[in-house]
Image (cartoon, rainbow, N blue to C red):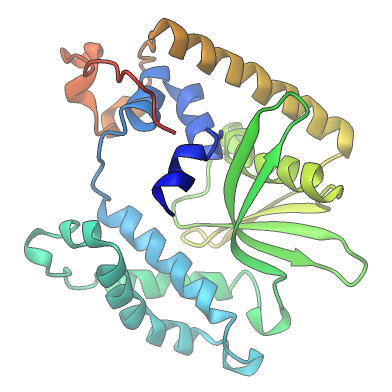
Length: 273
């Protein structure tokens, strides 16, 4: 992207940043406005690696999309990640991959094959970026792991998860991201996806959700617009309060959080995207 492109590109709301604000407004500020760096964890790197293999798996002829072939793709995919993403090198001390780590990625891929037969699938899109402007002017942006399309034009949004499947009480939170994608597809293509599918590779579990129709997505749209108004108000007031929860133990920004005796950095004069 050129400097001009970066300067003119509009600020957009993504599923991850929306989830950050819902979880903790201060977390949203530190990630979206202050843009504090976060080194990926081994778990995050493994998730990225598994996604990369699953994306490339569908480049192969259908008959070659096997667990054995996917396992063979892990090593080369990891080497590409290290070349293309310099921060990946900092995941492991000394840059050495621990014994069994690549094998653990192959195990997650093996779990995928218990949930679907990729030889019978021909995705319409993979790792595609989608943007949609709502009637209110709010711009949404996100990346969809996979989009399937039937001959009749029905759409299915698929998202791969390498963590554990949530308990029933937290399923709505897990589906938030997919409803975000469904709304963007409806606004850009005029089609409500027939199904939203979460594939939990670790637990070898599938969570399918079927939107009721435009009415449900309109309600979700109103929720996002209310969320964006809250973000805009917090930005204007420069006030993003921490929201303590059980997730605080995993937060990488405790040094900047008043709940842990820290202080946020000075508020940027110009808030970046």
